[in-house]
Amino acid sequence: MSADNYPPPGAALVEELDQRLLLLLRDGRKVVGTLRSFDQFGNMVLESSYERVVVGKQFADVDLGVYLVRGENLVLMGRVDAEGERAPVGLVRAEMDAVRAAAKAEREEARLKGTMRARMDFLDLE
Image 1 (cartoon, helix red, strand yellow):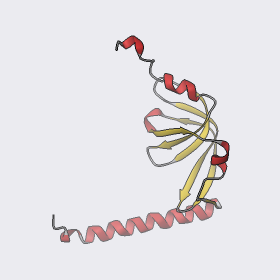
Image 2 (tube, rainbow, N blue to C red):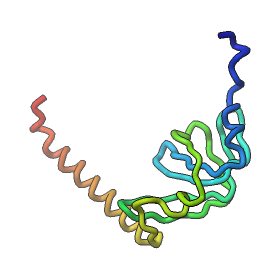
Image 3 (cartoon, rainbow, N blue to C red):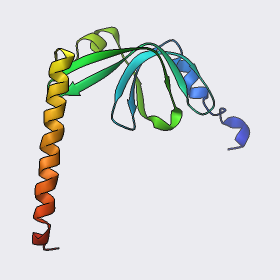
């Protein structure tokens, strides 16, 4: 196949213009918004966007408005339907303060587990 048969870089994003998208970023954040623009590097401008913070079975949304995502930070992208966007299956909407408290507790638990593993490192038999 010759190089003339391949679409130019970023052409796949043309089909996603004006669509509601869910973006999973490299740092684990989940951002939902309407794709308004992009460039050849995969940088994207989202409109009416928000970050969905999920901890356990609780979630909260943080409004972001117009949001720029650098292409290098994008891990996964997909379309979102209107019903799935507002009522995710198996999750319960909670106040942001409750979700932040749960996230803090989850991070502390992970830190403690890491500390315990480090203390028991001498038991590694491999």
